Image 1 (cartoon, rainbow, N blue to C red):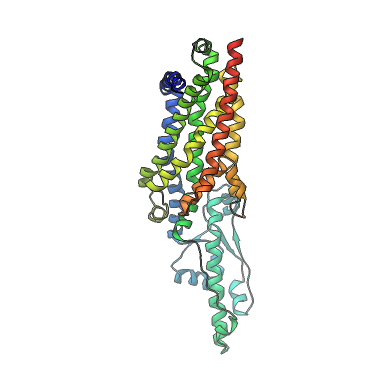
Image 2 (cartoon, rainbow, N blue to C red):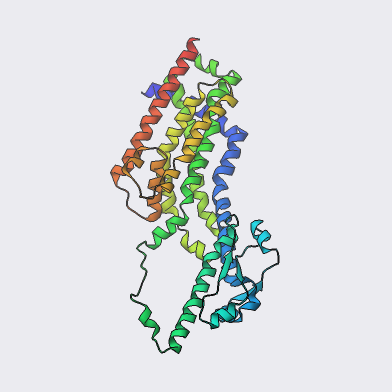
Length: 391
């Protein structure tokens, strides 16, 4: 075993140095690991900041407001400013140039209100306009408040207590604690870390297999007295080290990235500290080894780097789709999720963000699955190298 490790060590050092010298790998490390946290958080901060800015503006865009002075008075008492809608508001909503829904009031509003009727108003928006669609709920709630006020006044004029219309009192209670609510915001972190680790290992895995075969440097390595298993182990160790390095840097990048959050509410909800980063790294290390071995197994069959890139798209697509299972599954985490690599790590990282306990059995199962996948893939790579040496 010592001789085997001694034979694998020089291969590991050589491949690791080659990977870190490669410009593509270095660029991937910088972009996918160091910059991913700040970049993602800046985008989220800009999005949430835009919503908060529009919410603080408290503006209602009205078309035909001259027909409803009573309604406009209610808006003013609720500290909302009224802005006249442009003449082509429908076209602007479709083109996403208008970021607020439009309240359309038809003529005869005041007359219908005095007659005790229910005059019709329209809340106009476009589903393709996300900014306008986000403001529909607040505008509808504002109109419901106006309805309730008018109903209360009408009952009071007739000597009827408004409380008689309320058969029950409704009080909402949210069972989710602060950590669970914060986890919904930080749920994007596992996906970006996973993809950064995968793409970081991609170039190193393809270059050490198909890349060396294309350059003609693989055959001289196979002519050395080193066992094929030692060569494979050294190459895999270098690729896995690059993937693990990117996983560590990606997790740590979200720590200083939180300084870029411009929203105080967002900064208070986004809980990702050293504890979460350490757990993420521990959960991702076995997956980094398994994905590195699978990428090498896909690439060893190819004769050129471009061919290996084309074949690896299947694995890239699978890894990017597996986390979506937990998104579309509304029934919660299932036991079989822990049997699928990537999905298991995503589920466990979600528990970490929620502050839940991680039983030893749930931690051990994904590790064993990743170890079995890595061993199978490395055995396949060693077999292919033996055939290549015989030719």
